Length: 248
Image: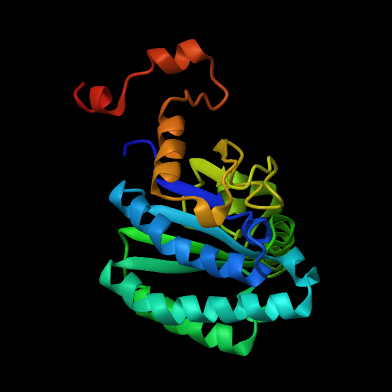
């Protein structure tokens, strides 16, 4: 769909979904993981080239150890079961965050999946693992400072295009649409800089129940909006379409 190339999702509500059904929290996470395949498929069907999923934050280490262990196990399971599917559909896996701090077993499965899909260009599944936007900024500042110290960068020439190359998301366009499930209306330290002009869609549906039609509803909501990027509504309305500009 024209104008919508990148959708980012905060997959929220697994625990509450399980609690409402009298199930352990891990059952909610398990159902949430299985839902990823459905949403990835509908995103491809709609020709959305990049899908970013917030899977595990730097703050999530504060959860009970048994829950963290279960989450890491589910991540390994997902990679083991779905890498072949990613290859079949020519979807490149990309990871943002600090994956080097994840358990060794997860790192091995990640490395294998990244290697298997690295040459694909049409579709990208970008997964935020051990990710926090503030941590990303700190890492970017450190990397830029190191380049300045080595004479590879000039702070007097620092602008946004240059700084953005130091972010985890370098080479990936900013999200056009950010979706958060479960009814929460905050973005929880997720892609704070990249979502500067993203449209937001907050769904009351818990992630395990967020299906194909819910995703389509969010996309349709996006297409009903007018993106101004600092301009007036009149300026945006009067601007020529890409097709009109090409036919000049």
